[in-house]
Image (spheres, rainbow, N blue to C red):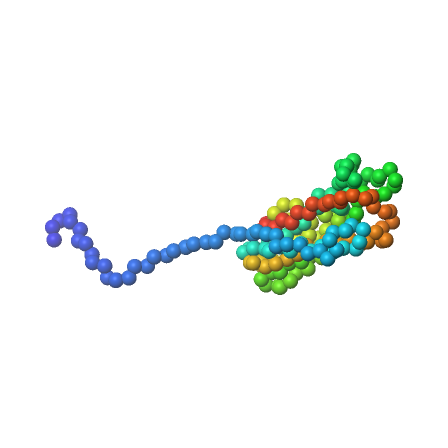
Length: 187
């Protein structure tokens, strides 16, 4: 061997080990499936409307519901827009109809989970005391520390009493409310 020249070593094995790592990011989404109403949405008759959805959360999540007005609100009467939310008509009829919302959904670990019921006025802010109030992803009800829901179904059911149960009769017209369901990874 010549001075200053290094000798090359022949590998002693015929195996090459390669480590590969990959990951799947947190994913949590919701999609509407449909609605079911047996009474056609009449506000003067006791009614229950169920809005079905599909969850796709591969990580523990929270699901929340928020209401825009906290009641079904008169928006149009006889082709004329209602004046201000909550106003009574000159004849003394009410322009808001309270309802109750119930949230249920399935998880991979626990099957069907019932998040409970909330009165409509509790769905406008966290101060209302509703256990599933949430107005941005990652807020609302948590089914559990390790619960996921991949391709699972749920429903938000809204029901109201008939006119005979109200202390003040409702003004004729079209009533509306906007409910928003949000879902996101637990934070």
